[in-house]
Image (cartoon, rainbow, N blue to C red; front, side, top):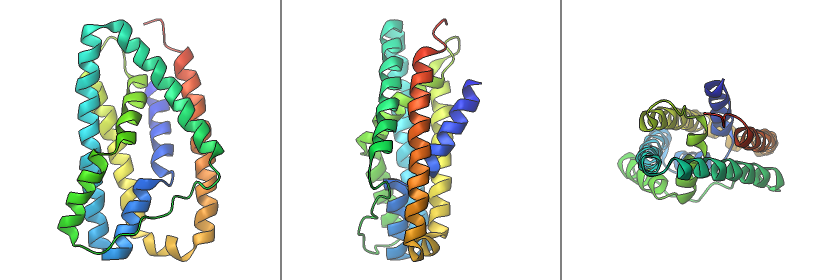
Length: 205
């Protein structure tokens, strides 16, 4: 049941328009499909940096104090509610694509790694999101790595699809804005509900 909730939430969040999709679309427009795909691969690797940091950092924390890890889970659940409310209250959920210039696939790949690896919001999200779906009786680090890799894989897949559909998306800005609003509301409600549910359930273990 916990994994199904995780899979649903991760999928909804992956398809929600955000800075990551905006970046790879902008990179595609500037340098073509090859450069866009290279940036997708780069941001995926950058995301794995956060997964590993969360896995080993939280594993060290629980090894020292089970109480501290429980606190992290509660704070994480509250953070998910906060993110959800912010999504619901945001007036313009369709993030404007950043202005970038063509610079080659290799440079796009490297830049994608750096941009994502240095994204503090991504680090905070993984620290708040992943621990909510772990099983207390199993080793923590492997669980966090597996869940994190699933998130990164879904995000990267959606980014790749955005690259292939970049021309169509950009030609229909009105329709894209409407889709963004709907997806943003769904994601916001999902985050709030998930945060509340996880803060009140599975606390007996």
